[in-house]
Amino acid sequence: MSSKIIDGKAISSQIKSEIKTETEVLISETGIIPGLAFILVGENPASKVYVKNKGKSCEELGFYSVTETLPEDVTEAELLRLIHNFNKDGKIHGILVQLPLPSHISEQIILEAIDVKRDVDGFHPLNVGRMVIGEKCFIPCTPFGIIELLRRSNVDTQGKNVVIIGRSNIVGKPVANLLIQKEFNATVTVCHSKTKDIKSITSNADILIAAIGKANFVKADFIKEGCVIIDVGINRIEDAESKTGYKLVGDVDYEDCFGKCGKITPVPGGVGPMTIAMLMRNTLDSAKGLIYGQ
Ligand code: NAP
Image (cartoon, protein in one colour):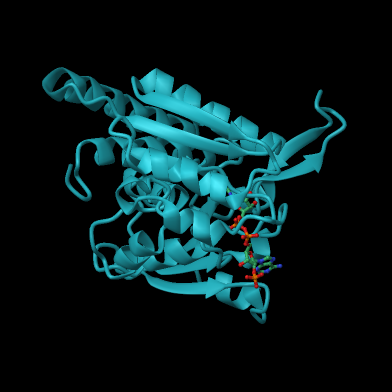
């Protein structure tokens, strides 16, 4: 693969193989098997695929996993009861409630019910707060994956201008908070849908992170020559040549930007596979008691 391409598939495989080895050691030395509980509500096809893939990764790495599938009309109280049971289950080191939830259930109430020590998605306000002040915590998996991609591709962040497009709680905001920590020392600008003249901001970026959910939004005239592009977007667009009738593209027009940028993540095969790898990392760290103790 061209050295320009940041190969998330290869990097995530490397991380998973490290996790597998560490898991074998943990089990043989302590008998502790990392355990992850998935909670899936309703019939959202994308959510089902995500949970299935995460379960497959657990199997590959030697983790214990359990999936509870609840009907679309489950009450908030029933869902909370299930979470409380997993919170007390000694075999479970991580609990993941697949989002989005049906509209009659408050995501915030559900996420806050997860034991902070088992919050391997890193969405509990306590973990978010600890991340912001640079304390040990579970880092949300996609931002963690982005940081790890940069680290393992030797992308220097020290004093660099990082521009993030998108300010969601699961990608844009946590990535911005991580990259301003002293470890990374980046100068971060966050753009959103109300930002004026985005191009004038992005064209100053040494590292551009796009997380907006708009197919091929970033074009070559948005970027500076030699910049590093991390494309978080996953968008389905029609493709008559594909068997499924669609293909996946990012928020960045890959073909248009490839010649001008220094490095770029493809879609698929960039940030996507890293998200699952970092979920496994967080679960293993939880099982080892590395974040909050045993
Ligand atoms: P989100 O919650 O919908 O947030 C999108 C953000 O983009 C918002 O902050 C929005 O601004 C901003 N935005 C939308 N249109 C814009 C425009 N024209 N100009 C500037 N900013 C604009 O999205 P998300 O959950 O962060 O996800 C973003 C993308 O990443 C999606 O394609 C999603 O599928 C993908 N994703 C991938 C992974 C992975 O594992 N690879 C994980 C998570 C998400 P406002 O705040 O002003 O509305």
